[in-house]
Image (tube, rainbow, N blue to C red; front, side, top):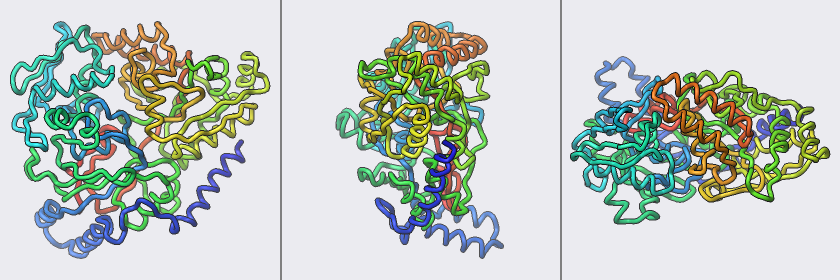
Length: 544
């Protein structure tokens, strides 16, 4: 198996020699703002004797179009509750803002709202909004708009606001959420998860499908065009509510599906920044002596790589927990993570939580690499010679899938790989979906992990929910964790959840990706990976 992992790395290295020949769906590198702005930066270096105030004025008036490459396939951009993937939430942010953001300590801080106040005894969260902000269609951002966004979020089948009883718009800029029971995760869910604010008027006029393709928010840039599978274009909002911002003329986000093309386009100046990278693309760039920016912070919203077993489909072998455990024990997660991440940018974990976080359970054993134990579980399931199943994955995960396939072959398990697109993954992993093998995918990993568990391991969930069992003891413990009135009580229940969820082995965590991203030297203040993996600050992004 070690030879197999080494062969994967050699293949990645060989691909480097082919990069100049492969270009598709890429911006024109001869006219891209990355090249133009880099020349501006070099010119500024030649005149470094100019005073700082002149340089600051140049920054504020420099303009330009920021070109960002993202390894992603997107389905929707513009309707409350419809945005499911982290990539969609990243891409929409030039146009759509949240009620709250996070600070460097992972705490909620007001953004579109002025303040929020929690009252556990009276079961309310009161939100005061900033005044004078308008959506891009000219309509007012106010309490009724927040109320509508929350109601539509729930109407899409999302369970993050399940504890909500009713919403009261007290006055034009004050909205009060009345809860059925105390939920200590409600503020984060309402002000961030359901806190992306879309124009109610536009959505009502255009309907779910059309509004879903045209995000209308309050952001520093207005949505201009979405060329499917190619790029999303935003243009400067001249009437943005923060005076003097934004600094750029526009932002273009290119949707890539090939590591080689993405790396080549960046190297030739077609992209200014690459914030979301698959490990293969990262390896290609590091091999070309490109300097990656490694985030050293433990961030909210980290991406955890997981194997989701189909536990409920009658055709799935994974209705037998022994076969789930056999697969989990057969894989050397450390070797795989080290290989595909070029030795950096990952954290191993045996549970759906970030090591070091208050919700992490140090005593959870998980399913460490142990081929002999894997064979024992195969025998216990009556499959001593192994079995076969299908792994569903998007093509960007193929290298990872092939490594897993190699380890499973060593213990007699035959895993076939079937590539699916984002829409198909959303279908089978979403509400009402199901699958007969395993999905290789990713999930969000926050310290506030009980809400993440609720998305998957309760019958009211929204992600991977159809293929999961919904044990009563898990649901009860999730409720206790979310209803706790003290932090210590909440933390204890979260740690207990880690152990309990692991015992059912419905999802096998592999490793957490620590952000490693790339940008040109002249790109400043994008806010990528400063406080939260999904959030960035398009309004402050600029070229120097």
